[in-house]
Length: 69
Image 1 (cartoon, rainbow, N blue to C red):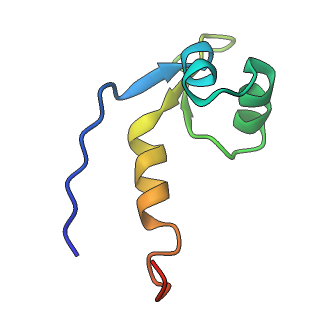
Image 2: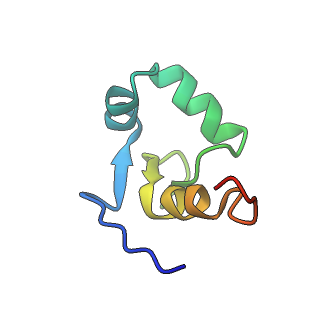
Image 3: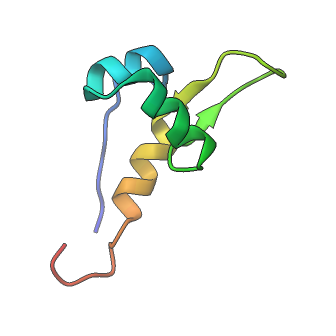
């Protein structure tokens, strides 16, 4: 199966991701720490950005081998 996806931005700040998803900033931070959300951080203690490209890829691949998808 071939799929084309278009993202409005390749990465979002934690605050913007929280706003768009309706969850708290603290919850987003915890999901990053647990490895549930892919993020980009370029320096120690630098700003974290949610990697929307990788997140989209993860979602597209999740359960792709299941008959009900």
